Length: 267
Ligand code: AMP
Ligand code: MG
Image 1 (tube, rainbow, N blue to C red):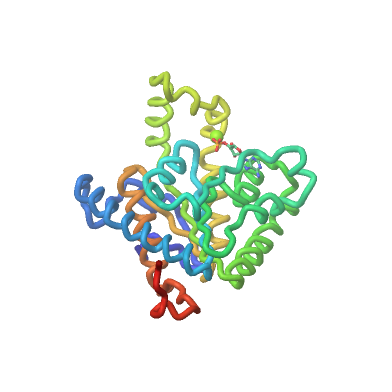
Image 2: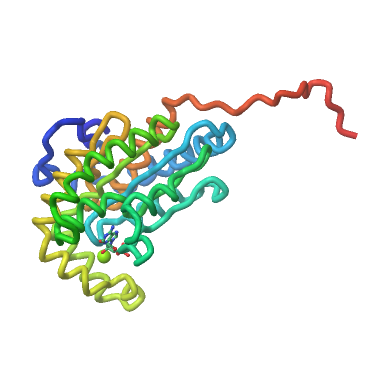
């Protein structure tokens, strides 16, 4: 999955990333789905030991253009994990109370505790994406945020948080198809947001903002992955594979019981 990793200090051109890439599966959806199912089983095991060991914390950041598949990825990758140790949170436009605080306030209060896995559906990155594209705060104010974010994530990492950041990359044609599908299916109307059409007009500005944000915040401790996401099944595979590989490398173990259980007799 190295080819999707944005190396720290490297330049990123999203245009050069093929959103329809299907990697080793060469378009074979059934084979890919099978591989993802096996990875999900592994992830279930890894999360079980994460929860039991209570040593690490896992934070997953999902960012994408509208219809990019953040909700779908949450279902497709994290289905079957133990709800005791996992939760997902969606960050919307900040409330008046949130706006009275610094922009990381609402984020920091949701980061995972020991043993937990938390999935951010949108995140503090909105504060350097939509905020910069739409000039919601002066550029000289938002420009400082890249440094804040790097420092914030390094602090989380120093405190045992394993951070995954995924940009689910679709192209404009794919977004058009997905918006059209939402329009044509009454059961999907609740997902259709007229405001998304205004954002779509700003496609190039958003892509440029993503490039800058990803370049400036992909670090060794909190790297970004650009996930080809036109094919939902490959998107899920890439996320699951990156996570399983990294979590396995932690070599997490179940804690020992301090009592001598060999003498215990249950009456
Ligand atoms: P959705 O994820 O489709 O429900 O939409 C949530 C909306 O909230 C998106 O349009 C985001 O751009 C917006 N949003 C999330 N965080 C922020 C933020 N920090 N500042 C401004 N808008 C935000
Ligand atoms: Mg939206």
